[in-house]
Structures are given as structure tokens and as C-alpha cells.
Amino acid sequence: MPREPEGTKQEAERIFAVFKAAGGIEFDADILQPAGIQLDLYGEDIRSRAFVLNDPERGELVLRPDFTVPISSFHLSDCADSRRYVYAGRVFRRQIGAVPRPDEYLQVGFEDLGRRDRALADAEAFALVFEALDGFEFRSTTGDIGILKEAVEGLDTTPRRKNALLRHIWRPNRFQGLLEQFSDDGILPALDRLVRKVKKIPVAELAKSGGPAAGERTVAEIEARIEALAADAAAPPLEKEQVKVLEAIVRQRGASPIALESMRKLERDLPGIKPALDRMEDRLCRLEQCGIAVDALEFDARFGRTMLEYYDGFVFGFRSPTDFSLPLAASGGRYDALTRIIGKGREIPAVGAIVRPAVLREQASSG
Amino acid sequence: MSVKLGVPSKGRLHKGAVDWFRAKGLDLGGSADGGRGYTGAVKGIERSEVFFLSAGEIPGDLASGRIHLGITGMDVVRENLSDWRSKVGELARLGFGFADLVVAVPTAWIDVDSIDDLDAVAAQFRRWHGRRLRIATKYHRLVREFLGEVGVADYQLVDSRGATEGAVANGAAEAVADITSTGRTLEENGLKRLSDGLILRSEAALYVSRALNLGPVDLETLSFIQSKIRISGNGRE
Image (tube, rainbow over all chains, first blue to last red; front, side):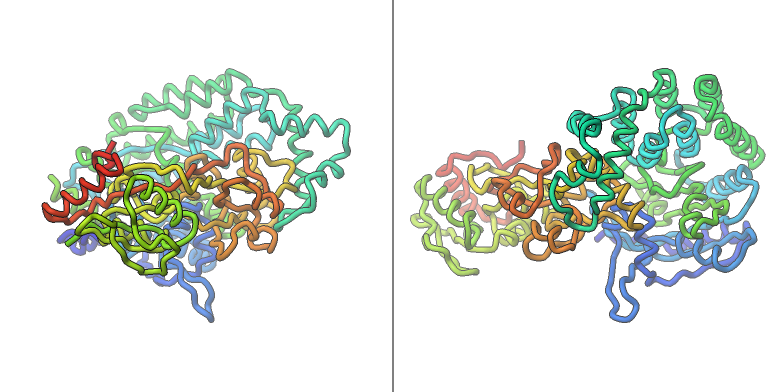
């Protein structure tokens, strides 16, 4: 296991001081966290990387894989007001990639919960990380999952298809596959045969024709899916213009103001994206007020689509401009949707960011 | 030192390996199923040792350099070693021990034919039951990589102890990912393969360790063995 580079602890303390100076309360989360809530919120990728332990009394526990869930849970149960939390501590993630990375590392971060002015909170989160990394060479990238989400929601198609696409925003390959499928007949040949039978055989009978159910998936579920498939098969393919817009959004890359401008031109074919673009414009304005040179700020629609599923709005990352083998030194984003799951329906505005001091030290020593 | 060869200690991989070497004119000694840990030598080759090991131990022993050559299943190597290519070289596929690692679901799922359907059903299952669809397997790494690549969400891998095919019937999982050669065992357990659910086509293969620590004489022995089995190179393509 590679050792933490020298000076990591001091770097962490320095960053923590920068975050703390911006205001907020210190938060210290237990290293042993209940596994249920932590693991259910992440996809199989993080689940597989979590260190899970078993306690006869407390059940399944997990070594803290991050601070966001404990802090959000605390905030949602503790207070309704807006509040900033600052933390520094170790997080634990099993590393399974080809390049060995430490499976336990220091993370310094903050979570800004409950702020109504989302554009300002987003801009301040970015600017604060920018400030903490002052003196380091880095390349920053921004993205916005919200634009893609609203583009999908704005499509003229069935809720089933929209949900399928929304669910796979974080899996770009499947997203593209679904887009192609829905632009075509929308149904794959093997199921097409099944759906055709619905006209001749009652669904209840059809659902049972495969034999007795096994596992916990019931015949009622099979029946419901056949019905949904049959209903969906009747839906027309996606409009070509709208698919083009969606594909143009997915590919969008360049300086932020230029990216915004070119997406504005897509509004005519997909009016649903206007609110998200307005928010982006607002945010750029706020970023400028925070002293960020937005004309040079990179926007890449792909950014954040392969990161944690819980980001659903503005996303950003900072990495070494020269050493691409290093992971992101800092990243963050908006995760309102996550609070809705934790808060069992109550959603609050939430944005946060993390810095990995060890990566900064590595970057400094690699030149 | 000597050149150490790891061979599965029992089952069809053991028999296949012994037969394969014999066909190349190399007798591993102990033709009957040897006990675990049994050691012999390749007859006629000085400074060679044969270790009969469990197929699952051979990848780790190759990676650590405890053995220099080893025969085991491709599936076992890919499952047990992270970034396996950096640790072992695949010298030859041996033409026995064929097995497919596949994703299988209950035959009752008449609405499921492909990975695409499995993913849709996983979403539906989570909505209905409030938890993730369970897939039982012994091949966590391979299955997770595969499902990640093709983009399946809302599932959870559960470890199958014992017979994976039985996991659905006994209520431990909704689907399985398991090794099959003819598909009959799956059928007998009320399961069917997904049309595009082939994760790996596996067979027995001969591996060389990348952690070789051999003297000149041993390297000579190794290249002599390699010449006998008509394989050159070190497994790097």
C-alpha cells in the first residue's frame, strides 16, 4: 500500500483552516457507520468498495466511506435552518483498480445545507475550493447534471421511457443504448414476440406461462411489466429533433459562456431545458462575482456522469494539468436529490465539496 | 532452487492437466488424484517440482512467485487477481475444463430475455420491494465488472456458499451468475441464461508467474519445459 506523502497532515490542516474561516461548524462523524443507509444510497461500485463489518448487537456496520451522508442525516434530523458544516477525517474505500491507491485517506470538506440561493451557494462552494488550492497548478472542469435531467424530462415521450433514461444518466453507455432503442421501435425483438401475444392471450395467463415463480419476484410483477411493455410498445419513437438536442447536450464541451450560448440555441426544440440553462447563467454570474474567470472556465457535459450517482446539479473537479494518473485532487457538487432520500421525502438544497490533501502533496512532489 | 509447477489437485482440471502434460511427453507423477499439498517432480526433468494445489490457490501462488508455472481455469485467474495481466502471463489455453460464466434468471421470468430486461426488472424490483435485486455468485469481481460495463443498476451481489444454482430456489437471490458447461444444471434449477449474459468463456490455461525469481539454471529448466510443450515467449502478446 502506498504511503501517504509527507506533509499530508499539514496540508489537511491548512485546507481545513481555509474552509473554517469561511464559516460553519465542525462536524465529526463516527468512523463506524450503520451500513444500511450508507450502502443503499450508493451504487454497486461504492458498495463493493466499502469495508463492511458485522456486529452481533448493532448489525452491519461500514467504515465511513464519506461524510456527506452522516452530515446530511444529522442536519435533516436536527434542524430546519441552513447551515455549513466543515470536516476533516479519514475515509475508507477498498481500491480495486489496476493502479494501487490507498484504501484509507484523509479527506477535508464542507457541506452547505439549506441555502435557498442555489446559484450563490454553488458559486461559493466552487470559489472556496479554488481558494484552498491557491498556489497549486490545476485544471478545473465543471458540469451540470441538472441540464441533462431536465432535457430528458422535457422529451415528448412516456414516463416509463423518461424514467429509464433518468436512471441511467450515470451510466453513459446504457443511456446511449436506451436513446437509440427509444428512437427506433423501442422494444427488443425477443420481447416484441411476447408483447404481440398480449393481443391473443390474457396477461395474467401469459405471466404464468413461464412456470412457477421463484425468488421474491412475484407473478404480479411479471404481469405488471408485460402490461407496461405492451403499453410502451404502442408509443411512437422519440422525435428525431429532440434526440439530436439531447445528443448535442451530452456532447457539449468548451468555455462555459460559449457552451451556454450553444445550448441556448437548443431551447427551441426542447423548451424543457430553459430553467436549467437560466440557473447556469445565474451561476456563472455569481461565479464572476466571486472572482472566478468564467470566460476560461471549462464546461464538460460528461463531467460527473461517471461519478457518484448522488450529484444531480452543478458538479466540479480539480486535477493536475500534467499528471493524468492522479485522481481528482478536489471535487464537489449539488446533491438535493440525495437529501430527499435521506429526509424521506423532505428535500433541501445541498452542495458540498471535498479535497484530498494526499493527492495535492503527490502532485506537488511530481512537479 | 527449482522450477515449481502448480497443478490442480483434483477433479477434471487435475485429470486434464495430467493428460495434457503426458501428451507432451511429460509425466507429472502421481497420476491418480493426489492429496492436497502432495508434491512430486516432472519425471525426467531435474530441478523441477510439482505441487498439487486447489485450483483457487494457484492464481495467488503464481502472483506471489511461490510457484512459477501453474494450470488453472481462466475464470479463477480473472476473479482472484486484480489486474491479472500484470501478475501472470497466459502461455496457452489448454482445450479442457470448458465453462461459461453466465447470468441466469428464473425461467418463470417470461418477460426477461436480455441484460436490458434484467436492468429494467432490477428497477421494478426496487420499486416494489424497496431493496435491490439480489444476484448470487461466487465471481464477485467478474460479475461486477461485467454489469458495470453493460450498465445494470439497482442490483446487489450476494455471496453464494455451496451450489449457486440453488440460490434462487431457496430464496437467497432473484438471479444468479454462475459457471455452466451444458446448461443442464441451470435448467434443472428452473433457470435460463440471458441471451447476451455471457460474462466469460473459460477453459483451463497454463500461466507463468511475473514474479519469477530464478537462477540461470532454473531459467534453462523453464525454457526446456516450455520447449517440450512448444510454447515460446512469456505470455505477453
